[in-house]
Length: 385
Figure 1 (tube, rainbow, N blue to C red):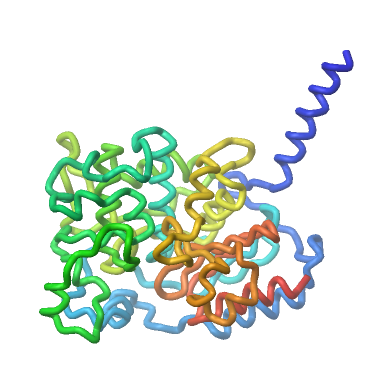
Figure 2 (figure 1 turned 90 degrees about the horizontal axis):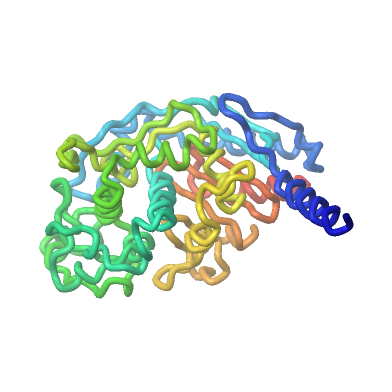
């Protein structure tokens, strides 16, 4: 009898402990006052006012903004869909509850390179499902076409693609690897003739190589990545049906006789994930809870931890998540040094952020942050307690 009682008490304790965070149902999200969690409501509002007053006020037509923002790339062009953006909006989520928000948080907007964090997550799904045995495997063992031909390309692992140290050489959907974010101190001839580096030895943020990861995952899953994301992550976290994930006009490939679009890992050339702040918030809440949603495992905790482990080639970067690591102090701005070093975040062009603050059991989502204002905003939130 005592043994049975002990088992019941243990189960009760584990269940109670798993309910520390609230998980919103579909189409509804409970709201609480900041004061219920010992935050000063006036100071929180002051932080929100700061964000609104200092928001990115660039061109609302993102086709114009994208081309203007990457004007140093002579071959840069729009190849996928775009959407005129809305005003600044966002959420502060504490213990799963919305404790503050501003703007239209249901509006679907482009999210640019925050898409990369979603791409990383479904790579984790492929590893969890054993479709990929290990992220340290050579991608050439899974993708059998010419994408990974070459002495160095053949040595690229999934991990190299995830932490942007692959230095993949080639052309994907009409874009050469060297066209993306070139060194403007060099000539075009120098960009084209730059020697390929050994995979895993050099960090270079490059959307063509990110799109190679998306293309490679498509070959592994054998179905569209938007469908994979919906079935394995977005539906389990009760996301809305309003988000979309696009590739380029010319990124359609044949998968087992079915014409399927290979999606892009960001909106650098158009495309990427179009999504609301509220759906971003659910995704952030999943990562805050180490891959568990309302008691159910969605992504392995092991993958979550790998995703936010500093890379050898850039201690600020993991598997397509940015990390406020103290290992990266040489990279950090002064403001980020004033907030906890275990913060991690997805980040996209134009001031799109999904920020995870483990110490506070908090997720912060912001759209169209002004340049270098995000960390100040986070500090204002933390100082309101």
